[in-house]
Length: 607
Ligand SMILES: [Zn+2]
Ligand SMILES: [Zn+2]
Image 1 (cartoon, protein in one colour):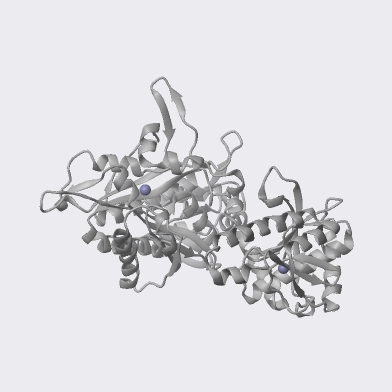
Image 2 (cartoon, rainbow, N blue to C red):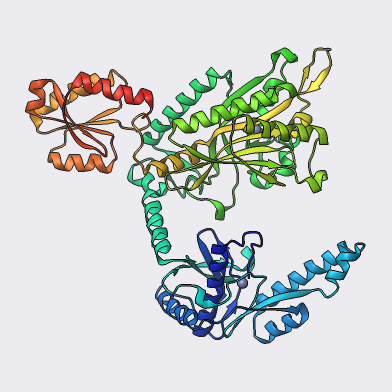
């Protein structure tokens, strides 16, 4: 059964049809199998089964063989519309309790739709015979499904699909339900595309930031600390410091001021902000003290607002931009945690802009400029931009009046158009408190990563009564913009690791240069060169272990060090170093000063 109705493109239809074929193959292997659901997902499909025994990896090729046989028989996907009651009986008789449950749920939805459209004659005519449900028959396998599918199983090439893995999955995602067995697979139109897909997966695996994080000694997490909370090791901390320094310089240039705010605040604060009502499930529980309850912060905004409110602000004072690399804590569900990409403690490159309505467009353009400049500097040249707006049919769901929303949405769209940026409007995706621009960066493998956001907020400005005095001496509500240009440090590091496969550009590399001494009599010279580089703020280490030069070079390559400088008798005599550049190999001898000039240039230009 398909859970995606709006994404019925060709590949989705092919993959979803393959999931039916998988189910038919499972039915052949286990006639008593009970079936859950089998939707398509990013990169493939799955199907959930309740089986008499646990599947083992060796079952997958057997199932694939059965699937090939079903494909070869070229069964058609026969569609039928039947009354829900009848279908329910049919599945009940076939011993398919999960399908029966789904039909019950479906007919409930249909009945409530009927009630909702009671007064509309036309709709009543259409829904008169409901609840009807669609089933699809493929050979001996019948499934509850709204389709669409291919015409017949033969349209799938026998060499262009693959079963990938087996995993456990609770029925309907709830821990209260039975654990089913989920079989993942994928299918493409041709074998060539399937092969390319696996090549890309392999490349992605090599770049996995969790794997590289260990190999390059960047970060760790510990059961004793808790899931989703990471410790930054010295090398990752160097990268972070470089990023933060760059971030501060670029923000200062653009008129941001820095603030530091605490990690905890009284529960009352989070009641005023609305977080306690609307965001509680993502917050850690209160800390109880003799002086009341305190919360660890999930966001920095209320603190920045309180700083703004410490004195009256005139229209001339605006815009005011407060920036903070602020560490926040959110209780994300255990199942959603994923390496550095989804964590429970993270540092946002946060800022809040307080401005007037007539300044809004310029402020948004300013943030867009900054965000794209930053991403470009880190080597991301492609983006996907989304504009999250109100659902025009459900204006009541959103706070703030109509005119303000219109203006705000227009300002965001205008800014994107002024910058000639392509974007996709996402109606209904706005949060209740304001519309937003979300930018996804595209990495070296073409994958999208959540990056900068620009979020307008009418809610906090109102709850905290954030004002300025206008030209006529009257208080006006200020507009608040929340924004990040990198997202958060943890996710951004994960993204950088995978984008560069751990081979950071020189300006970011935690160790930029290793000096490798050939023998013990070259050590003194190696340290002398190192001192010279250090005095130019180049990050350098001397490798003087009693190992062969070949082994030292290999180790340097494994650690993805941008420059390896070999020093021996010849180099000492010529006051030079033998330079090996990562990815380019041996560049030959170079005077030490010449090398310093070269690397400083690269650091400055962020090559
Ligand atoms: Zn289907
Ligand atoms: Zn904020």
